[in-house]
Image 1 (cartoon, rainbow, N blue to C red):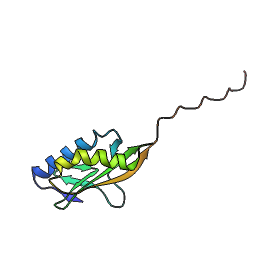
Image 2: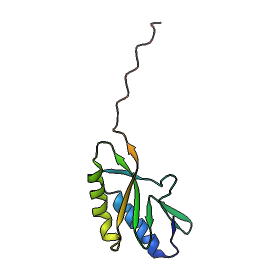
Image 3: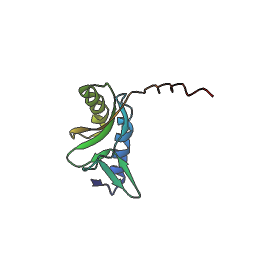
Length: 111
């Protein structure tokens, strides 16, 4: 985890989070699991984005049916201008299934 003491970390993490969410393949940011992907800021946190001096890591929920290379291309294209030359790692934390129709209920017993 990274804690940002200044407004630069806040601006970076917030801008990166907003940029990632514009990618059509991304349905949400994800805070990660055993290895949290989060930027800690005074009084709040930015889930799904970790900004360090060495790299930027984003953790996302991907839409079902999107090839992972397409996802990473979309995310990196949006984050690279904000990453200050740092590599951008994309972690797929979860899959959002396609909207499914609810099955019709079977007819009940006649009254």
